[in-house]
Image (cartoon, rainbow, N blue to C red):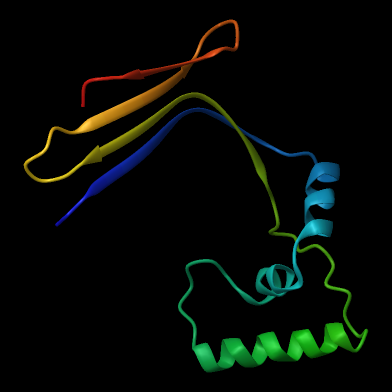
Length: 115
């Protein structure tokens, strides 16, 4: 059986300040800091080479040779939603779409809406 799910967000995203980003970096697990150094998102790679790069950097970190400072590409955004939609459908059933909507007074309402 094929199920279809969709999530939609309407609102805005605000890039965090350098201080906020720095605080997040300090909380990242080691594997994420290593990944940030050795990976270019979406770029093809050879897994064996990638694993070797990972293991080498991990060893350097464990031996105190690399402190894994924040990378230049590390960034973060705060998501500020106004509307969330959650949609589910499957064959031979009525689709359901639930929407959460924030009002001017910052209160959330929930309703089923047409798909």
